Image 1 (spheres, rainbow, N blue to C red):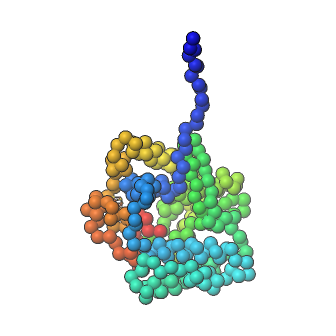
Image 2: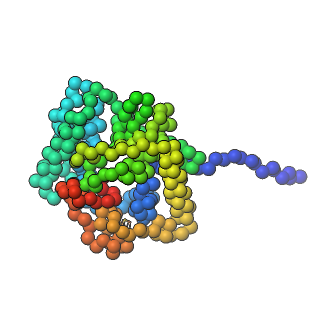
Image 3: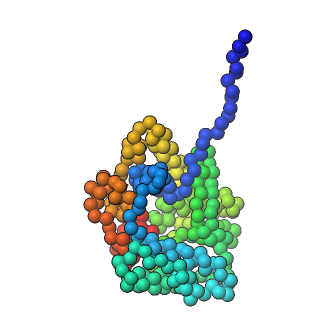
Length: 290
Ligand code: SF4
């Protein structure tokens, strides 16, 4: 005689969407570009490197290494030397432009660290923090995490030509998630986020409340839900339909435009690879330029 087995009542928690703030932002920018970065394997070849990314990477690296030096060695000249040591001349028009920008970037870090107290060791430099909710597990690396009194401050370096405003700090999903993740990881209050713009020396600050942080988290959940739905749809419909293109002003800056007919139609000419350099800081470019 066969006996009917009782149904197993397994309380299996739903799978969390594992992501970084960049992954969420990539989805918002363009689902097809998200697909190129996070779904297609192998990843399609990218276009030529961008000069402004070269500057950003060298500045971030030099500033991170500067904090690794002994306190007595944390001088402005040391920051400039680190910048020159880490420099890779990618994306520039020619050697002359690359050399000019190496020196401009060296000047940026030199002037920036001259305003810092070398003895005030940050709580974290390039510090990974993580946050788990019932729907997502988000992690990311903070450029710098300062402790000021009994609270933490998230510091994000910016090197692009976009002139920053308070709205940039207030509206940044990444900075809000970093603040929440820093609270959870370090078990200290963290509501202040700052953008430090190296080309101008400007610092833009925003202080979140529990309510504004909660709002950003809800937005992250909403984006994560959309992405999870797209991944599920990709199992039964064409990838092009699950991850549709979103042609627009970012297409001329897109690393994957060569693989995207809709993007090429929207922006027939790729922007030259040195166009994001902050040559004229008074002219702003919105969007991805870091
Ligand atoms: S070219 Fe434009 S539409 Fe195509 S993937 Fe890039 S951003 Fe999206």
